[in-house]
Length: 96
Image (cartoon, rainbow, N blue to C red; front, side, top):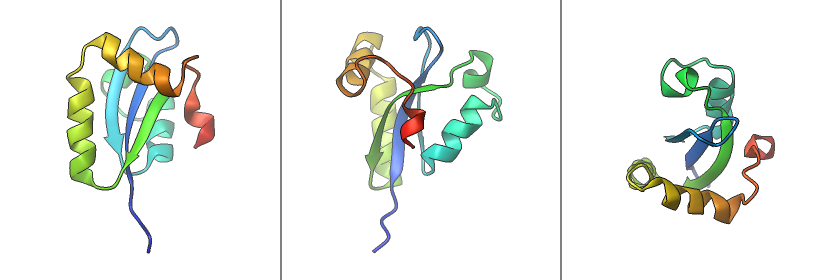
């Protein structure tokens, strides 16, 4: 069985001041698009390109729900989520 996964992810800029939460079906492609500024919008405008957190979910409804949940959090709760997976806030895109 070929299971389809979706990814909820957090990006930040070079000094971790700006944060973006998104979801996608193809995380590798989406991060490439962010890093190369191929998509107009928030991440291009604010130079947000560093993948600091991601998680896999099994369906699009779960991905949308989780993205909205994280977007609704205060900044310090988002920071705690990143700290659990990536305490040094390194760019995780090399893992993809």
